[in-house]
Image 1 (cartoon, protein in one colour):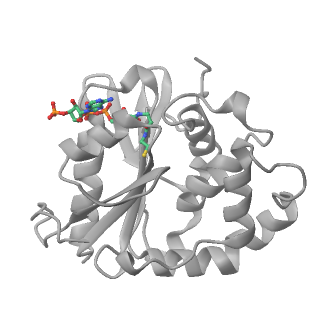
Image 2 (spheres, protein in one colour):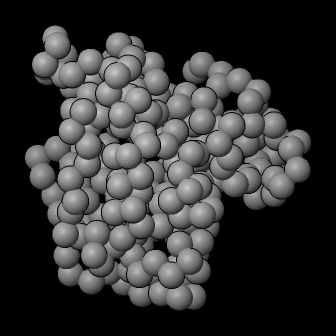
Length: 234
Ligand SMILES: CC(C)(COP(=O)(O)OP(=O)(O)OC[C@H]1O[C@@H](n2cnc3c(N)ncnc32)[C@H](O)[C@@H]1OP(=O)(O)O)[C@@H](O)C(=O)NCCC(=O)NCCS
């Protein structure tokens, strides 16, 4: 496993010990490079995607780094970075209002990336990168489920921190933050090629709202107390 590096500063003020040897703190804009690496190292349905992409930062530019910069959208960070003695080890990233987040990306995020990355027609059809390049150049279309589940999230842990209950704790922390900020529900997408993550969301209070050949969509209703009250039919 590649080391992510020392960025993130385990001794940094604001970190909070979760279990012995593991801390977390709110994501900051300076964490963007670390988030990008963590995203890539878990980006092939939970496995390292480094050898599958021609663009090392592309996955993170779509699914991780914007959340480190989106303070202006929600007025605060809904991301948590996990740190252990070996450095950054994972994160949960989220936004309160997906419609506002995507409007922000359309105005402030995608234009720069559209200059940096080629269109998928330029020789990437059928590759791992094609669907990411398509998102960069076409943006994210509004989805009716955003009405009931306006928030969304991404959670990734390096293998050394998987299977120890940290994923569940990260979800609970984020759901409590989103609920406290007034969100009625949160959704996420997961690849059908990642059955471990599908099982994880089923065990952590999420209900499957939709399924295609390639992906599952899960949602969780949030109550003001932050405790799930069960999903509404989607
Ligand atoms: C998916 C992930 C976030 C789960 O976090 P985790 O810390 O490993 O999971 P937890 O230990 O908190 O498990 C919570 C529950 O989910 C279940 N679960 C977690 N991973 C599972 C797996 N691979 N298969 C079956 N069940 C699983 C656990 O058994 C546990 O259930 P229980 O409490 O009822 O016994 C983490 O494994 C990960 O980052 N994987 C790689 C990246 C990834 O796939 N991210 C999701 C992309 S959508």
